[in-house]
Length: 447
Image (cartoon, rainbow, N blue to C red):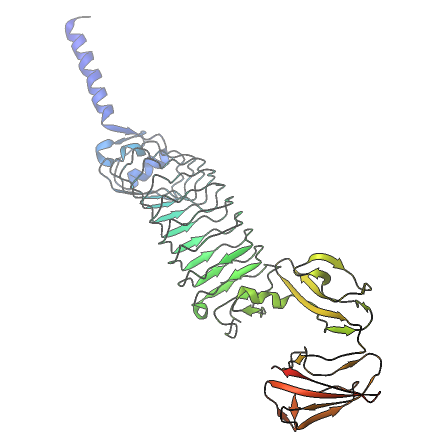
């Protein structure tokens, strides 16, 4: 080979190399065609696009173009916004796109997405893919993060302190820490595996969808701007909606089968626009929820013999409060003075009543007080005559005026005189015995 031929071959090789270095390899015909349609390539399809035509592009929109391979995207080095949604991508390499701020790659077939090098990202929308992992810990500028309809089980957003919108529904997430996202406005996490949700620090929240999870409690009392709330289809036992904005809120807490009451701003407000529409057990405090658990009540008992516990419908007998102490049963004989508790519970709440059994050796029992307020307890004053030892009973005021005279087995005195309620005070009695003796003393009226 002579020197002239060698020089010619060398020049040809260099020319081909230079020419190749000025083109970007784009093997996917649909991707190249999309770039031709946008005017970044002149055609025909040859798997190459002039690099100079794409290196300065800042915005690339190529949605719904049947693209399955995005090789070549690495030379779009100036990109700040990329929309490749609705394609057939199983992977995408955006590691060279250091200026990228907006990435929309939703509705593809992605099984892996690495955005660790895209530290300028403010919006990442990658829902409707097959992602099982997503790491956004380096994307500290994110304000929008949407990854619904994937199979992600772990997500850490504690570094994303600027988040405003977070949508992660239809994944496999068991817990999520939102304490570092104070500006969060929209949060949807429906159809996950959440058992707890702490929203105390998300005071700017206005939209919440946490339906179809495993939540047992939800408290939005620290979220005054929350207007749209869907917490249906959970295992809620406690729901506090008392955020000061109930009148303007759209609320759905249906299909929480064990929820027996809901804490709200005002129980008397109209909540018929909420779901379920027929729910009525609204209260102003969680402590009031026990009122909706049925429990039997029995009056105090005074006897000079034993007392047999009667059958009850709601609850069980115990010797101590809150189902502590020894259990007792209907038919049991009580032979010593004591307080007996009736305790009942649902899956979400409990309720309790109690009564006192006084066993005395006396022939009669004279109460020291009564409370005539129509609550069913101690509403009348009377003397219990166990052996028919009493002839009659008279009640006087402190000045000696006779207020009431009655037999021991009558209804007693209700605290009234000539149709007038008498005031709280001490009143006096004179009890005439069949033996001729007279017992005198005083008792207290307390309303």
